[in-house]
Image 1 (cartoon, rainbow, N blue to C red):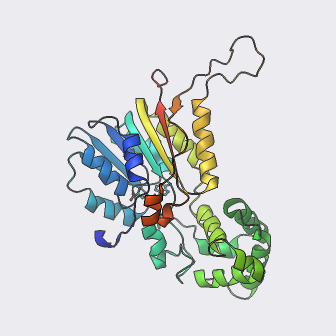
Image 2: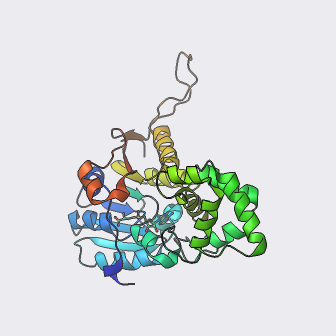
Image 3: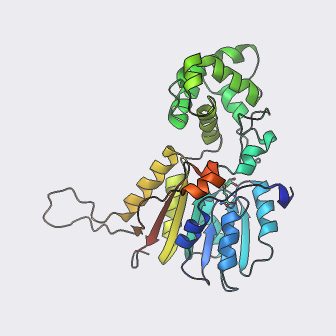
Length: 318
Ligand SMILES: C[S@@+](CC[C@H](N)C(=O)[O-])C[C@H]1O[C@@H](n2cnc3c(N)ncnc32)[C@H](O)[C@@H]1O
């Protein structure tokens, strides 16, 4: 994997890095290293006393990031792992207190644009969609072995696809004869399951939601989010920050709720004369979710649905 072919334009780079950095000698964790776009910006601002820890479950991202972070002034540790293991990763590195943690969720443009990874409805390739190619579960397994009901639920829940049940029924019918092997075959089934008028009126590609749903299921993207963000916050030093970039409403809802919950003080039922719960906020939310500006969107349309959420650890909450 050559560094030159790893194409990904970082989203809201200035706002994210400015929002995260508080000290040039700090420890910063990028949980979704990708091509090290954000990470390079962070690491370039750190002093030799600073430390950048980068995590990615994709071997291609790890290789690209290693090359890009070769000449930065600070210490760098790159870990090929899932950020759901953040606790263990930080423990093994001996980095129990950190100054900032970044999550730039979802897939990179490199993953989508590399046809053979099978993430894209635009390129024909075997159904795969694994970010971590060491993992067993693939999109092929999901499409060909999940029950019709499970598929319908996934399309509805993770794709918010109102034609999910019908698409699942079409898949179940098709695979009776022969397995659905490629992204093009899946696109064809989705298109046939949707009434023509709906297909024509669809915002974006008609198969977009089904592909998003299968990708989320294949990589178990949502169930790990809340616990991972809480782990990150637990390891922040007072004044340390967490930054989360989300790209669709499902993940944004989870992130918003986790951060709001940790920012809440008393959780006693209303009406009690004095607080009995003793619950204290761990973090302070830093404003509302930020969105990319018009200039950024002109240069990077894929940033369209991005939201940046920032929060700061409260002193005394550690
Ligand atoms: C949007 S890209 C990050 C791009 C990066 N911030 C940049 O500017 O170059 C997301 C990356 O996170 C990785 N990723 C997604 N979920 C992950 C997880 N649970 N654990 C580790 N890496 C993950 C993907 O493999 C992908 O490389």
